[in-house]
Amino acid sequence: MSILVTGGAGYIGSHMVHKLLNDGHRTIVLDNLSTGNFWAVPNEAVFVKGDVGNQELVEKVIKQYNVDSIIHFAGSVIVPESVVDPLGYYENNTVKSRSLIEVAINTEVKNFIFSSTAAVYGMPKSPMVSETDLTDPISPYGSSKLMTEMMLRDTSIAHDFKYIALRYFNVAGADPENKIGQATPNATHLIKVACQVSLGLRPKLSVFGNDFDTVDGTGVRDYIHVVDLVSAHYDALNYLKEGGQSQIFNCGYGHGFSVLEVIEAIKEISGVDFKVEFTKRRDGDPAALVANTTKIRAVLNWKPNYNDLNLIVRHALNWEQKLLNLAEIFPNQGSNSTDVI
Image 1 (cartoon, helix red, strand yellow):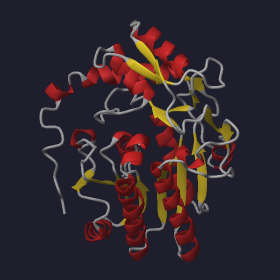
Image 2 (cartoon, rainbow, N blue to C red; image 1 turned 180 degrees about the vertical axis):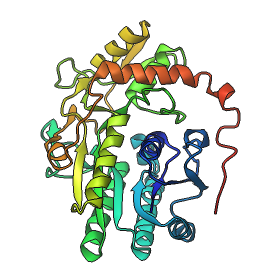
Image 3 (cartoon, one colour; image 1 turned 120 degrees about the vertical axis):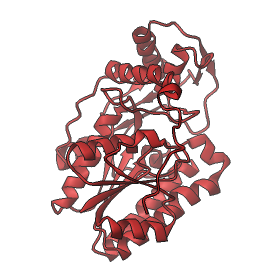
């Protein structure tokens, strides 16, 4: 049996692939390389260049490699972009997920792990949110993910099919051994962008709002190391394989840091006092958004190992420094992919 990882050439997906391979799982990666990088996929994985919405291809992959579990990362993830291109996000995140779920049912794949988001909560009344709190997304990105959660719920009721949806908070950091990290062009994540500014790759860092009702006026978020997030996926998959029922879990640490606290950590670790510019709030930004992680810790016995802002920043900065030389290290990145089907 093997595991299909959609979007396995992307930031989080590639970390997942490394974890699965390191633990001896036969791993199949499906990625169209629209944002992912072929060089991020280990040689030990089977790589298929293709789109998750291509049902004929997905069915062929599942049958050829005897796939019994799917971990679904493929999708679009930039909130402001989703506001400008809502139909594109509903197509990529919702319609194609529906297509993938249908193939999973038709090929009798039993286990499905879905990459969801804290954006499904919208503007919560309390800074700390639980899985049972109201879901009221305010962006097409959040809505597109919530719709997929609904499809998974309804499908699991109608078929012999179990799923876990993991609602990510703010993912950051990189592989501690610096083998892989976030390499998406024009990424909007605070820690990545601030690291780039510290290295002179961007002229300044913009902070959107400093008049929130928080400790220093800037937004507070729950930052989770990508390796701990991957371990949550791994624990979730094992839970399903051992007979666990369908679940939804928050993925964060249960505490937050303000934008200014993150900036100060990056300045201290990089040794660079880079330029910070304050601008107006973005529409729909909550003052604080922190995960209640009681459920995932209790049900999956999930135990994070990188719950340290300075460590997250250090790993992210190490990766950005390496990225400066990636063009030389991987001169053909993304162009030498192999379709094995």
